[in-house]
Length: 326
Length: 291
Image (cartoon, rainbow over the protein chains, first blue to last red):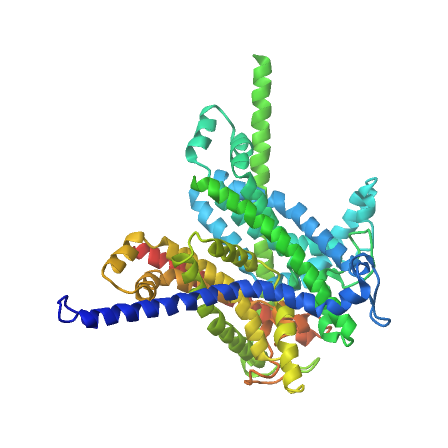
């Protein structure tokens, strides 16, 4: 469109264009706002629809839905205790294993590795994050499970199982599938997420801080433990929570190796089930309304728990970036 | 003096141990990657053949391919991108251009970040209760599980990724660009779409590629939306096969031919996802180099 020369004669024409532009801008803003509100509605929709879909289970069982370990499809009695327990235990195992290793890798990348090694290792970790979770699941079922049953499980039984008090956790048949296997697979899966958050925030630590500590004679480890970690604490915790959120809601990696058992068991070597794995395994075979509703109710619980965990994660990460901004 | 030396030595030893452990962690982390990729490559490679692309998924125990699942995956993913990418870009534009520090903007940005890692199986349940059941109800059972529902579920995973990257990329554009354009009297919608969005194109494309990588391997949201189908199907209102769901079904089965097909599918998925993430990095770094 050619520009309109600024003369008194075409004043009307100019005003018309200004008005049209204003109108277009208003519609543009409304369109964009609608899209942004859709983001919000996905979140609300997921919460409300799972609550609505699970209403039959919630109204039938009430609070006992949370405390009962019974999962009887034939007689229509459903309790979420075993899947909740399985979800928490596998995620906890994953965190216990993944956090130190992630910290090690982030430390290696930010302080130890020579510059030429940094980029390839960091990209490899990111590639690990991109592998679809179903690949982890298959690998767990076909490769890691048998490996676990043959080599790891007997060793764990003999040595960890002999420890007083916590030994009971590690005693059980060498099935290869179970809560410990699922936890290990989950740990491998969340490792890259936690690592990349840690590596990223470790790099935001001001160089002067680190160099001052080195100048005072600190070792690399002391700089990491006493300078870098305290400076980045909230973001590191945020990254860990991000990993936890992933682990809680992960479906495919866990479904393959958990064994889908509804028996409550103390031993980590025994099969169990997690919220996500129960839904994935049973939803398409659920023929009664109550069974289906119970599964959707489980989905609602999962959503609420992961929402809270991820919210805490984001709040802690935001705190860190606010400080970095100041 | 000797006490000082002792202290010095313990600190040195402690440091050496920590450094060794940390290097070991890196080796372990990369070791898993190599192990998983090698397995996928070997197991999938031996099952790879041209019939994968020409034959349908077989009945239990028989030979066959993944043609219908690949086709279904492509259709569902394209649908998801067609729905999710525009919404994500528009939402990202709003966040970056109109809501940088407003209260609603902060809330939406926060919710979007949570959606980024929300459990995808819940999204599947959401679409099941909000789309599959009502459609089934209003069409008297002639439509239930559908490729459309699957695409919708995946679109909800595309939206947060694209929104986030678009928001970030737009915020990186210099204020002078914006001000210069507005000073010329160009309406804001034109400034946003034709100047800012164009300047941030590489970043936005990267976001779309990343979201594609994200949905390629997603299984959980498709289980009870697109369901699965043994046959070639182009009708988006019918159940549709997809590679991840087929892998899930076949890998859990006791049949060797099915398991081989599952590995072949896993290899295809992995190659595609890795290629996408390398491509997205390439798009992004080329843009950075040009600036």
